[in-house]
Length: 360
Image (cartoon, rainbow, N blue to C red; front, side, top):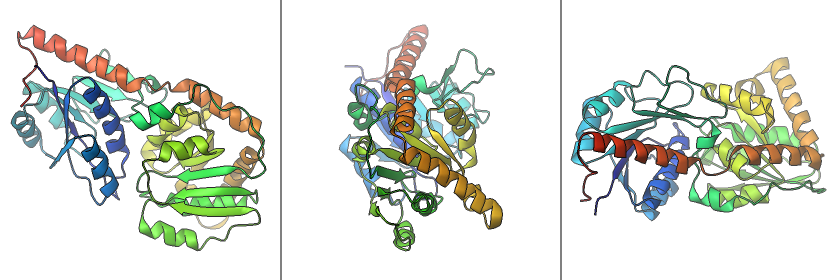
């Protein structure tokens, strides 16, 4: 039986975060559902839950090759048909080296292709455009990569407007909260003065210590929880979600979550602006401005608190955000990506008179 073999090159850790790994895991699940063999190449640092997620799916984790020559050697050693590259740090020449070695190469990008010469580019960000990559580009939220746990939790319709006196709020900022956004936004939420039951996902041990120093106001509670595979259930149970404008944005949209986003790193800015401008989520601003000292910082935090207070007090505003978000991401993005890859790989093999390699 012929089995296509897929390699995924990405890293995750406290500094890098887990966004690259999470979206590659979603892609891996779809490839596996089509009968492919998938292996991940990279470093997963101090994230036991992420290693367990890979193991639960039978996805091997191998050391990450860095240089173009090492990528080619790893692809040949593991008899790969396809290599997916999802990294801001790898040498951009790696894509061309893999192509020259006969390995179909997919580059997952966020706005900047970094000069990679790939067979196929994927930019899942809402409204993404790359006119310099005609014919080799899958762009926009129609190609958002979402895990099984998110797709199965997608409601059949966005949630209706529901009045609640004490909204359930969920705050999370990636698998590791590498930039320490949780304490900042928790303080802003408390500053609204609005009653709420706030659940905060604690990505790192130091974050919980900072949260313990925050005193909730009247009618407010703060509950820290560790990173969990049950995050989609927490999202769908929340009346409002506060999060970073990273890869989790597409999970929130797919689940129809009324969300308020903060831009925590520069490479999120363009996507954040588009999402907020089109009303898929409310915007809370840029993290460095929210953490600034003096009058500018106080003004930024006050503006964010007013936005949150308006959402907490208006079920209609929350429902409107949820409806637009739910309509923007249908959960079928990864299937479209895998369709495109398999079609292209099949055409490539037919053109050189071979089939896909046999499984070892």
